[in-house]
Amino acid sequence: MSTDSIWDRMDKIPRQVYYAVLLLGLCLSLVRPIGLPIRVSGETRELYDIIENLPDDSIILVDIAFGAGGYPELGPAMQAVMHHIYQRDLKTIIMTLYAEGPPMYNIVVEDGIDPENTYNAEYGTDYVFLGYNAGGVTTMAALANDMQLYGTDYLGTPLSQLSIMDGIETYEDVDLVITFSTASGGISSPADWVQQWATPYDADLVCVVLKMMMPTVSPYYGTGQVEALIPGAGGSAEYELLVNRPGDGLRSTDAISVSHLIVILLVILGNLSMFGQGGKR
Image (cartoon, rainbow, N blue to C red; front, side, top):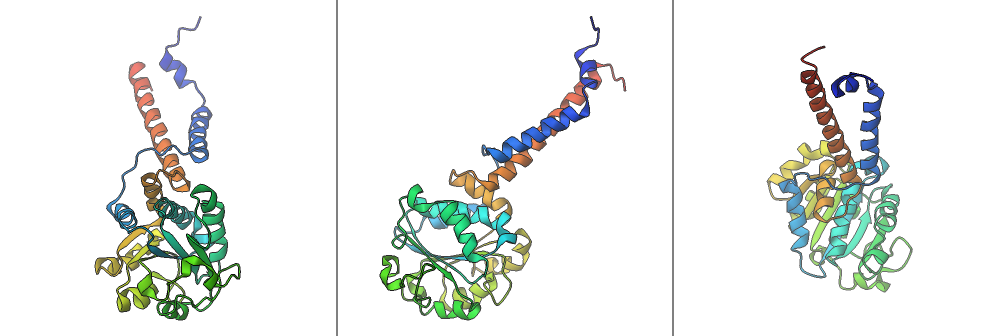
């Protein structure tokens, strides 16, 4: 019979076993996020409160200004925010001046949320996707004074046949603008929305951007031209937690948290093993 102590036997476990435990923890976190507690920042809470306090049947203009490259950060963030909007039964006019915007709409909204089956939201009554317009900032500026500018939605249906667009004529009929943006100036950047909507018309504007864009957009937040500003990285997980819709954001933070917990546990066990063996190397 072996006289080795439990600590001696632990020392003989191949390191590959510990790597396998770490890998298993990461995989489980990514496949089935459980929403381990994370701190919700004041900025994320601010955006949540803005949407939570909007009057019923408010109109929100949602701008998709990101493509496949920005999806890992902004896709989960947009999905979490849209879940909140549909939970509140608010109305959304979704648009894009970004060439990759239409596929992102399909991935995030139609496939990712499925509003009609998940929230009984009716297309054309509760939400509409106007589709892509190549006009860039020129279209953005014109849209402020003519919300019927697109003429049809992305399916080719005249806007006059969609009840959600009844009475929506100018910026005055829009209660909030939310842009999910990786865009540079002249296409659909946060600065463009500030210049074309927030500054001349005092429109309420919220920006969800790449984390690396925060320093360039934060001055507009500091002056009050942007009502709320959050980074997609981190902000998406926090928002998923607030709306109780675990998704890709919480998957990433769960994976990070679980890996840290496993490493901390192994460090503790390693130290206990050292002391248990009387300090032997």
